[in-house]
Amino acid sequence: MMDIEENVHKIKEEIAAAARAAGRDPAEILLVAASKMNDAGRVQRAIRAGVPVCGENRVQEMLEKQRQNAYEGAALHFIGHLQKNKVRQVVGLAALIHSADSVELLREIDRCARNRQCVQDVLLEINIGRESSKSGFLPEMLPGALEEAAKLGAVRVRGLMAIPPVSRGVDGNRPFFSEMDKLFVDNAGKKYDNIHMDFLSMGMSRDFQTAIACGANIVRIGTAIFGERIYS
Ligand SMILES: *Cc1c(COP(=O)(O)O)cnc(C)c1O
Image (cartoon, rainbow, N blue to C red; front, side):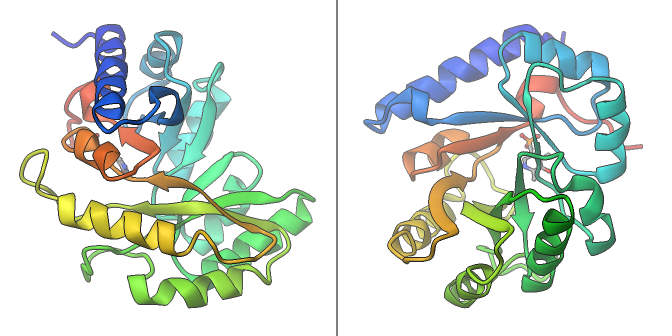
C-alpha cells in the first residue's frame, strides 16, 4: 500500500541520517518532492506531511496543478527540461529553475525576467554522464557558461544540478556525484555579482544517500514519496 505521509516521514529521516553520517547538519539538505504525474490531491498530502518544496517537470502540468492550488504551503521549483517558448510561463512562478541547460535558455530567462521585473534564480544543469540523450553543459563548458550568465542582470545563478545516468543501486553514481561536487567547489570562488554557488541539486529516490555523502544539498525525490509512476 502507498502511504504518502509515511513515505515523507521516512524519507526525511533517511535524509537526516545520511547527512549525519557525512558529518553534515541535516538542516542544510533541502527535500524537493518530484511531483510529476501526481494530481493536486496527492501533492497536497505530501505538503501537509512536511514536504517544503515541489519540483515539476512539465510546464503544462505545473500550470494546471497551480490553478488547483496543488502547491499551497510549499515552494515551487521547475526541474524538467525547459523549452525556450515556455520560459515565459515559468519565470516568476518557479522560485528556482534547476534545469538551465544552455546559454540561449539563460538569455531567454533573462529576457522574460526583465519583462516581469524580477530576478530569476537558476541552477546550471551539467551533463555529467556526457550522455547524448541528455541536455546540460558539459563540465568543461561550465566556466564559459558562468561568464555568459554573469552578463545577465535578471538571472541569478545559485548553483548546479545534475541527472546522472540511471544507476544500478545506491552507489552506482558515486563517481559522477563526486565529480559534480568538485565542479561545485572549484567554481564557487568565481567572483561574479550574480553567481552564488549555494546549491548542489543531485540525488533521487535510488541514490540520494550517496549524493548527500558527496555534497548534495538539494535532493529530488519522486518514487520514494509517491510510489512508482505509471506511464501509459
Ligand atoms: C522524476 C524526477 C526526479 C525523481 O526521480 P525518482 O527516481 O522518482 O525519485 C528527480 N529529478 C528529476 C529531474 C525528475 O524528473
